[in-house]
Length: 65
Ligand code: SF4
Image 1 (cartoon, helix red, strand yellow):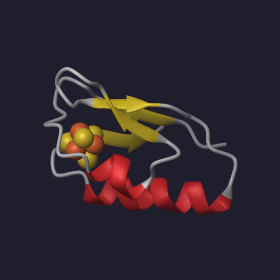
Image 2 (spheres, protein in one colour; image 1 turned 45 degrees about the horizontal axis):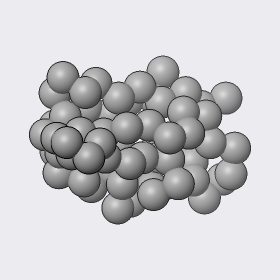
Image 3 (cartoon, rainbow, N blue to C red; image 1 turned 30 degrees about the vertical axis):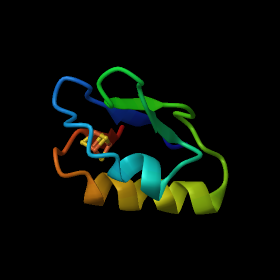
């Protein structure tokens, strides 16, 4: 089972995660920081997209725990 952790204190609001895995990540309206919509995605495509988003995040804010 996948569980996603997003550290909003280091997120810089680049939006790469929401672009890469839009079913899982969004950004808040005020600061653009990451919001996890689905912390445990079941679909294989979403899980792969999450792995890509973790790699692409420029702030290192995302991890799988
Ligand atoms: S990719 Fe990283 S820095 Fe950019 S919005 Fe997502 S969590 Fe924040």
